[in-house]
Length: 244
Ligand code: GLP
Image (cartoon, rainbow, N blue to C red):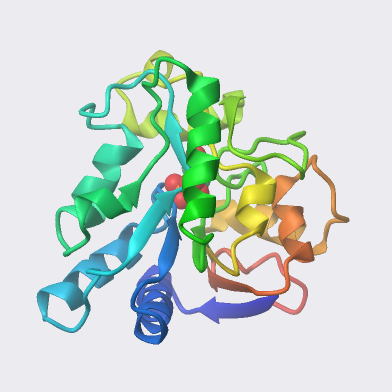
C-alpha cells in the first residue's frame, strides 16, 4: 500500500482531487467508484472547482457509488443520491445516465443487488475506487463479519455506524437500519483503490487497517491483499502509526 501523510484535511482533499484528475487525464472514459460521508466532501469541492475553471471534464466518465440506504426516498436530502447530487453531480458535466447508485427503494432488493453487480461488470469494472473508512473498519457499508467473498448485498447497519451517521439526521431513530452496499469482493475488484482518512477519531482504525492481521472482523484489512492501494491520511489520522 502506498501511504501518503497529508498536512491537514485541505491538503488531503487537494491530493485526492489531483489523483482523480490524473485518472481521468489518463483515461477519459474512466469508471470511478465513489464514496459518501464527510471525508470526501473536500475532494468533491475541489473537483467541482476544477470543472468550473474549465480544467476538467467528466463527459465520458461513468460513476458507481458504493452504497445507498434502504427505505429513504431518492429525493430525501439524506439519501446518498441526494448527497452525490449536492456535492458533485449537479456541479460537473457528468451525464445523468452515467451516474449509478444502488436503488434502496427497489421493490425487489435482492434483484437490485444482482442488477447493480451486472451493471458494474458490463461497464468493465471500476478503474479507481474512492473509499472512506468507518471507525469499526467498515468499507462501503460492509460491517465487521462480512465475508470477503461478498458481492453487492443488503446489510443490517451496525449500531456504531448508525450512531456515527446520526449527526446528519434529526435523531438517531431516523437513521435507516439497512442499506445496499458493494461487497468486499466487488470493492477489491477495482483496478486501483484510493482510501481517504481524516481526523484523530480515525487514527486507531487506520492503524488496524494497516497492521492488524487480515480478518473479516475488521473489513478494511482486506485492502492489504489488493496490489494497488493509495492511502491519503492527514496528520491527525496518522498519529497512531509507528514512527509518528
Ligand atoms: C459511511 C459510509 C462509508 C464512509 C464511512 C466513513 O457510513 N457508508 O462509505 O466511508 O461511513 O464516513 P466519514 O467519512 O463521514 O467518516
